[in-house]
Length: 257
Length: 77
Image (tube, rainbow over all chains, first blue to last red; front, side, top):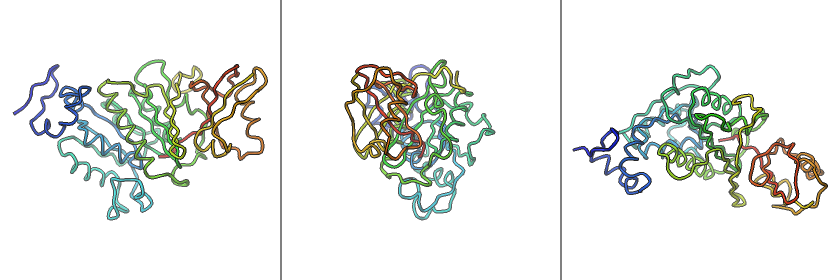
């Protein structure tokens, strides 16, 4: 038996109503919002410390289609924070293991795996039909490419980053005109800026940042509450300091202006 | 003129304090302020700044009563 939903959205099955019960009980989501979520497609780039919790929450939340993109293999040093993977997964491809575990978590959604490294030549077709791009990568160079992809494809971008005991989250509305983009914020960094390859990161910090990215995704997709749109959230877990900074488009930005 | 300066995350570690009330010359830029503040400290590769909770570039000219927050870039994940 299926429950009818307004606005020609897909009907939910009784199984889906049971699975997503705690979402449906929220007035901000309701049965209509859950049905909308099941129609959404998110591209998640990076299956590291941030990507793992994001993938878990988006899969369990019932995002209808999730495309996971990563080229890397699982390393023992990943296991401290990359919670999709365990000791038996070392040396396996991240997308393969993630696909298997996420499918077990929620076999009712569609998961696409893309075993590719992000570079400026990556095929934009991957992103053409998605509603949202999430940047869960670990270096400035890749992040600037993702920002460009997001602008070229007019898709919103949810960026998260974490290193040591500090992290940042921002929502860039690259689907809308005259909005700040990632390069308005970071326009002159270079690859000397270290990723977690060569500096430490607190395991639970990546969970915090990834969980906020997943939360912002659901809010943005269903248009409720207030997102971190054109805002940068600064998180400093060492000293328990949190702050939101407003961002404006840089009229001299070489990428979006 | 009086301003209030706040340091976030690893910038706080470098500066050895969370915040400072400063009396500075009129119309100096954030960059000039920063260059003065980091004398004798380990210089971070890059610092970002927000004045009164708005992200600004280092050329921003400070005004009486500004709250200046310095924070590090974070690109890892």
